[in-house]
Amino acid sequence: MKKTFYISLLLLVVLPGCTKMLDQIAPKNAIKSSMLNDSDLGKLTNGVRYRMETLARTTWFWGDWLAENFVSGPGFDVADVHAETQSAASSIALDDWRNCFTTLNEVNELLKSASGDDPVSVESAGNAYFFRAWIYYTLVIRYGGVPLLTVPTMDVVPISKEEAVWGQIISDCRAAIENLPEKSSMFYPTKDAARLLLARVLLWNGQETEAASLAGDVISSGRYQLEDTSEGFAKIFINGTSSKEIVFALANIRSTSYNLLYERVNDVDGSWNYSPATKFYTGLYSDTAVHGSDIRYAATFSATDKTRVIKFPNGGNGMNQFVQNPTPANSPIVLLRLADAYLIRAEALGYASGKAVLQEFMQKRYASVSIPAAMSDKDWQNLILDENNREFFGEGRRWFDIKRTGRTDLYESWNGRDFLLYWPIPQKERDIAGKDKYPQNPGYNN
Image 1 (cartoon, rainbow, N blue to C red):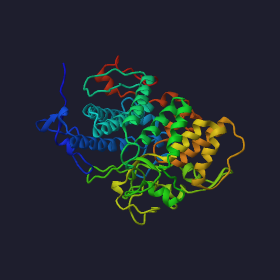
Image 2 (cartoon, one colour):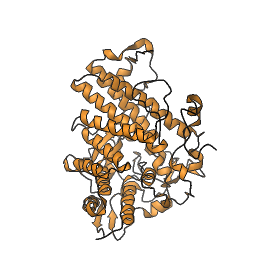
Image 3 (cartoon, one colour):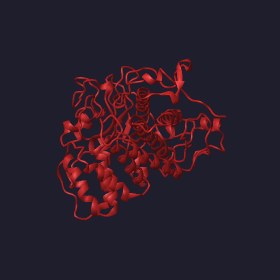
């Protein structure tokens, strides 16, 4: 039976600062999606961005927590992060799954509504393609195969193979590149943001040549600039940032329902979930024969409080913050920046061609750089992985870089548990959908 989807007029005024969520809409105020005008469609697009902010925050820190970048903070304690979070019965895996698919349905409705060929519709469609690619990227790097939903639906859709999910992401990224504007505010998706996401996806899939080319396009565009001081790096993450390094960030400007990254690692109340692991607090930014005096050190770790990650300044005075943050509750959620382009391109090109790219990047992050004249493939990979962890510590990347490269030898407590590279399909979802439609990932049946 054909269903007509209705969008509430209340939804159309969901802007940063609105407390109404998209799933709390009264149908008596609804209109057909086909009757939306340009103004309505723009507001609907803002509503989707609003939901993407919450999704980004809820899935943010797992790449650090699972990769042993973090230990328990003063307000949180877990004996084995994998055993206690990567369980089919875990509420964490279930919440992430449901958050992704709830937001995905709203993104699909935006795409359905943006059916015209006028500039507003085209850009709104570009936003939808970009966000759908981001959501499926979030899902596939965790769960592998997941249901592929490309239209709004409440029906149970069987899980597709992982390869098909990657294919959908790549297709959506290409559609986003086609529909999005070349340049806009850092808080709106652009062609460069879609190029950079596609480059990351292609790197995951072993398509290094195109990944390097796309990352190179972003670098050579001249629209962005690497920060070369500790203060400049720190200010990437504060409210009101004007950093030219940001390719795309979620604005996160609201008056309630705050998305507070700092509360998990650097709260003002003395109680937070995660602290930097000792080995990283004391050694991540150490000088080596390759580099010295990392500008990111002072902007990432407190000089006197080893339990804090100050990368997301909390606005407090006397709390070992490196820079002031005028309104920390409205700090942007930075998803893509120029550093991504340099590190993707350097890795994709390999040592012979990528050395110059990495050196150009490192010269902005260190007082001195001296990459060896020759390196083995493994040594080059180690250097790239180290740079990624230095650059993106606290940004949820490390676990997925290790998974992507298969370098589980870098975990101290891995103990051969390779099945943990994939999250379990939440058992509650399997019970609802049927185990034939939602088969469990290997290793979790018991």
